Image 1 (spheres, rainbow, N blue to C red):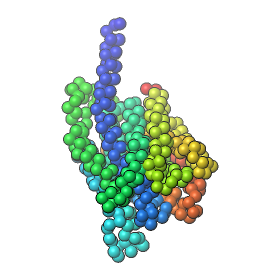
Image 2 (tube, rainbow, N blue to C red; image 1 turned 90 degrees about the vertical axis):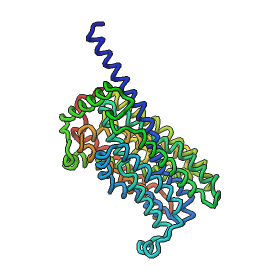
Image 3 (cartoon, rainbow, N blue to C red; image 1 turned 120 degrees about the horizontal axis):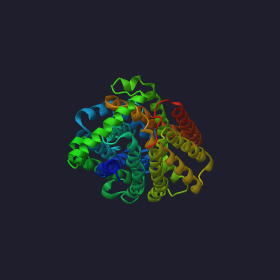
Image 4 (tube, rainbow, N blue to C red; image 1 turned 135 degrees about the horizontal axis):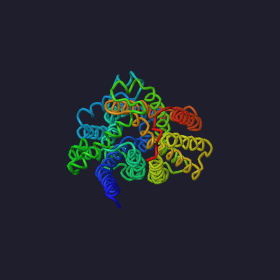
Length: 458
């Protein structure tokens, strides 16, 4: 082996070891952060099985309340990400987690706050108005967390490595459901009446506490970037910074945007916001309603633990699928077909839901297809906007795409709730509408130009 070959081998070994160290140090910790974040966002799906009856909430009330989270999320998403870039990830992500944990636990008081004429003015009961207010505030508090993490990962990983890392990080969505589903079911089933609290009140209280605890850990342990990481030596720090800078320079061939205004004048940002909207509509529609759909397969109305255990099946399988999907996208360097293909898998699953009725095994199979499709979509989607945005434009653009896209989190659950209310509990019309939205997102993804480099092999 000559000297140049030996040097190349040493450099490759150093690069591999450096990024493995970064991955080992950051991703498991961020993974835990996202698990507790997502659990607080979606545990309302399980609480609904009990609290809807206790508080006389119709499907329409629940669907609107579950979705209004994303209105607050939308309004404060871009400002939150801009603040993160200014004050640093450590302080801002810690603030986000602590405040949303407090608000999440406050849902235990949904039936205890009296609004008087204010609730009446909106034609709501006190409990309904409290539910809406707290869901909105939860969105306000959590705004900026996910796009902030995506932005944060661009400080550490070049684009060729980022999709697989994001896919692994985002398995927290599936794992939070795998863990949270049976835990939520067990809390509601076995803590009902303890201390004078109902099961769903215990659910909100207990599942909000971890977010506060982890938020304080973020403030203590999370570095703002490679140069602040005490566990990296100087050579490793400079190498990571250089790799990210090189990746940033490579974005020129795609018409790179760097300034704040570039995020809003590039039509690709708006198109990708619509694509993300299409995937998010489907994801949250299924996520917030899956416990109800599974309960209606013939499970006893009080057997919340069984609902939770069955909910583990779609989410557990989809966690594996999304990691493999993201890894294959990184291996091949192909992005657009992976994003569009995930949406098409979602379409197949949604159409399947219109056909299987309440048959348990077929229903679980098609729910698994929808969960796998939507999770694989969100795992690979972020390779597209980060391919041509950098700097302040990346902070604003990622937040904008995520905030507009996450409005789908309002419309998806609300759509199912309204359709169920009007049709006496039937879901089929909503599933057809969701399938059409996912198909639109797939088509836009495939026709949108300049969202990945022509030479994509990595």
